[in-house]
Length: 141
Image: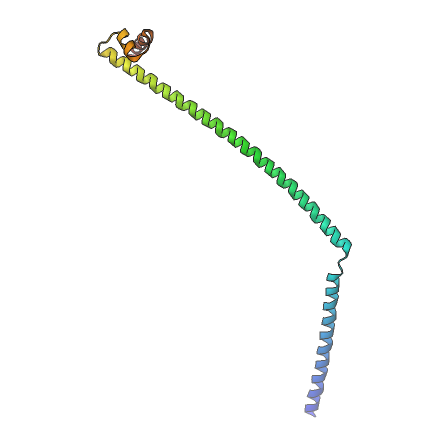
């Protein structure tokens, strides 16, 4: 009797298992049907929304590109301006060194006993410039 009772319980459990599997199978079929039942209008709506998003992203991208181009142009102008300022500074610095060098040469030749006209002729400057430099150097002492 024990064996027949176990056998009956096993059959009942197997039946319940089959019912459970059947219910599970039916639920899966319902979910699949819901996934497949997306209507044409819903798909069309999604496609239109995606198109609008693409158009908006293209507008944003174009604005960003224009902004970048403006910034690049501004940076190029700034670089040109900085280059011009540096060139001017270098030119002024060079002229200043030449003036200092000329003053030093005039002073050296004057100390060696040469006249103002000899100094002017040797350095290829005017006598007035030589005279002015010597006066300024004498006043600063």
